[in-house]
Length: 273
Ligand SMILES: [Zn+2]
Image 1: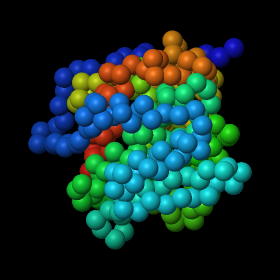
Image 2: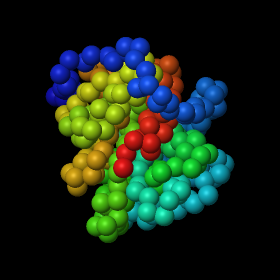
Image 3: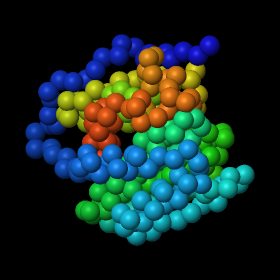
């Protein structure tokens, strides 16, 4: 028996409050038709998903795309690196697993994975203070293998240079949610701040009893992380089931999350040390 524990009151933060005076966050989003096209590339087979995600990174012009072998997995992690504009830049990691376990794996987690190439494209359009790693994690469904590999491959100095990790898993079932028990307070606050300014919902829903996701690997290692999802009491049963198909998606919510994450990355780049 599984349950989703709600974090406090699920109070949608939809007030019309702008950022403090003079503060602007300029961000981009994909035209809806293009994002839908990419979402329709969801395929039940992991090998095919890997190929398609790699092709999307290439098509969007990722200048530095690397494969990181993941022990036990046939497919590697896919890492698109966007360099910062100063030599000693700290890193922001944006991660989403691309493997799946049920249905066409549209929600879990093609919704997260296909945002990576466009976010990488948007972030390199201007000089940034941080370097960015956009990581398609392999073998999440096998036990978070890809994110564990990514973390363990780093030396201590590299780990401490990570300013934030944003993970996206199973988006578009409802307005953007975060997993408080697997996120750091500061990043949740910053997420809420951006959502508020955009008049979008942003609530904490704990999913400890539903399953696991890549954010826990970083959270346990003491690295600041924000774990984004869209599961609620009414929708968590869709993932890892035959219902994980296009028809289960709430397009408006998904598109809002796409815009939210896009703005959030710019905001974090400007605000985080
Ligand atoms: Zn997932």
